[in-house]
Image (cartoon, rainbow, N blue to C red; front, side, top):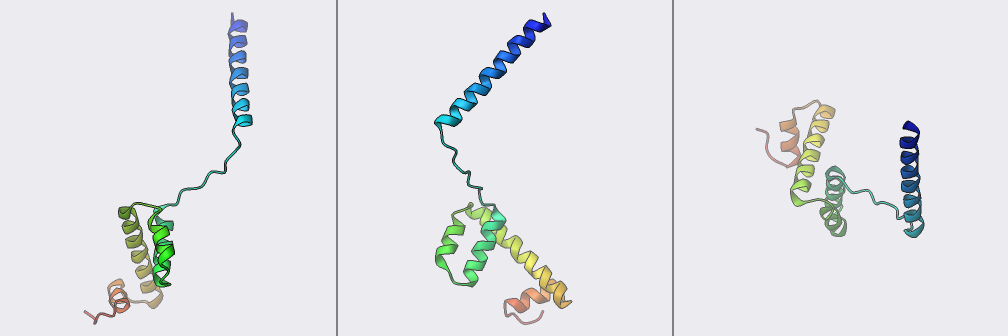
Length: 105
């Protein structure tokens, strides 16, 4: 009995392999383009803003939803302020105000 079950399973597996091979021959492999994530979009968007590159800004803005881009830009700003504060040995609030040209609180 197990021999016949094994035989059926083997024929099914062979059929599936043949079907996959046939599809691969008919359809040429297309390289998959990796989708952009929100942090990548935010990094490109912010650097394009700094360089006043409207074309790159528009391209990056199209990679993710406006909400996701906003979240990514916010996260990038937070991380940048924290990194600068550590580098300068100052508080993040003081660094943020200095970057925006605001008077000290």
